[in-house]
Length: 156
Image 1 (cartoon, rainbow, N blue to C red):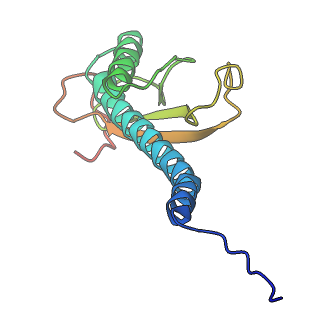
Image 2 (cartoon, one colour):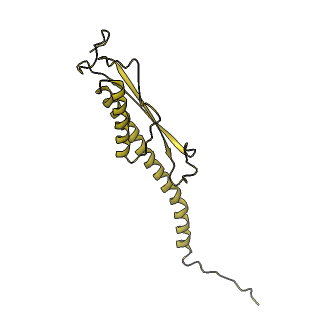
Image 3 (spheres, rainbow, N blue to C red):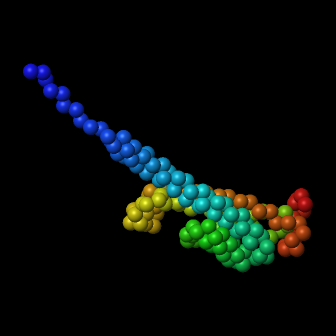
């Protein structure tokens, strides 16, 4: 008697293997793309918000009005990109804030971007599962702005 060979059919198993492999590879790839998109959106929002806050501040004429305008500009620029913003204090820092032509102000913004699909309880007040995005902008008060007394050392 000859030994009997047991053969198994493998028809259709390539499709099953392909589907499993595609799922295993595509899920992390999609997650990386979503993370990159959310970081890019937040980065663009913070950069635009810093620029607009500086421009709003230097046209105000006073520090209190300038801070209000800068905060409103940051909130608007962030809202335009769909990024939540909560102000932790003044966004503009300046030396003496005398609005002398030729002087400059600096805007520094920081935003913590939560990773996609991270539960809200893990990302409460301070997000542990996130990436920090920062932007800085320096705006110079024009010599022709008409605000304050010109600085004699300013190079207009």
